[in-house]
Length: 132
Image 1 (cartoon, rainbow, N blue to C red):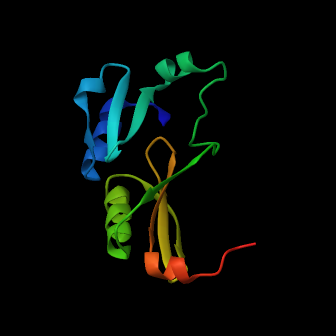
Image 2: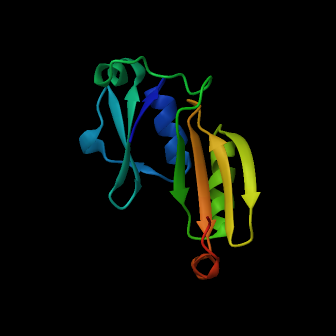
Image 3: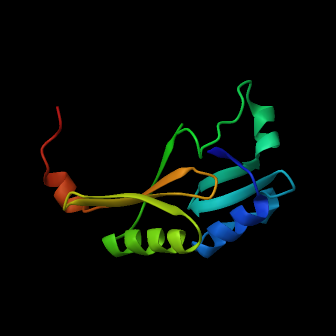
């Protein structure tokens, strides 16, 4: 995924405080390569550079929503830990959903992108009836 950002230094500091790392081989003055998980990356691009990839202007995610970014967590506690770290680093908490077998919380990062951190009990999800 590619996301526009306003301030590389602020962005790097924010995600580092959340415990993420960057692949510096793919970082430069225009972009940061955020390592989300094994083989999962987000390219965080300066707004001007982001605009060179598309014929539409980059959305200001502090004003409009264009995408919800969902990330899996290994436990309910990990969901809480990640969101609490995000809020302490400057994120705005959005909501909490608790369905018993599925638990999630979401936050807006400093550029307004909404991240949903979710845990699901695999055994309970396997036993639930299919939705129609």
